[in-house]
Length: 267
Ligand SMILES: [Zn+2]
Image (cartoon, rainbow, N blue to C red; front, side):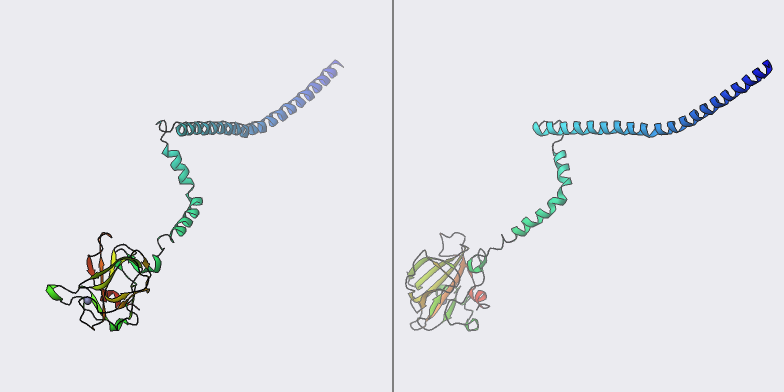
């Protein structure tokens, strides 16, 4: 009986041990996956540390930047660097508005001086023949012709009947209405470039209401063809001269340009 009991107890203890073994085994098995779970948790912690470090660095950077901006010239950090970095980041969105101002800027150089008779100072273009009814092919190049006392003509004579309208060759101010022995009744007109002078001589008379200081528009009648001055009586023509000056106050002489060259291609 005792043996039986002992045997029984032994069986019992065996069963208990077996259960314990099984439990501990299960426990051990459940520990193993726990260790695996522990890994991502550690990674999360490492990430947290990294994030904190990043935030701290960012805050430090912001503080340094703030200080450098606030205390401007202090050489704590090179001020242009953050600014340059900011500018380097933004050019893409800024690139589009940059194009539009240039497009708006293009019309700026284009405003043509009224009637565009002169392209650049002292370089007249777009002139018209200053006598009504005269065509380009009727012009004669007398620019280099000799004149009395060893002078050179430095102008062209546009042959026309008496009282043919004399027209302003370009836009410009009437700077002087003058009568001289050689030129007779004359007009000095200063172009809008303030550098080109148009000289009209041997006029029969001035146009009504013509006054010094007035702006004459291109094509406007400013006088009438005649033979005043040293023109031979009855040799009615317009003596037309163009020259460039450096000072508008000294408008009576300058570098002569050949009117024939400038008018040959005109209307
Ligand atoms: Zn002449």
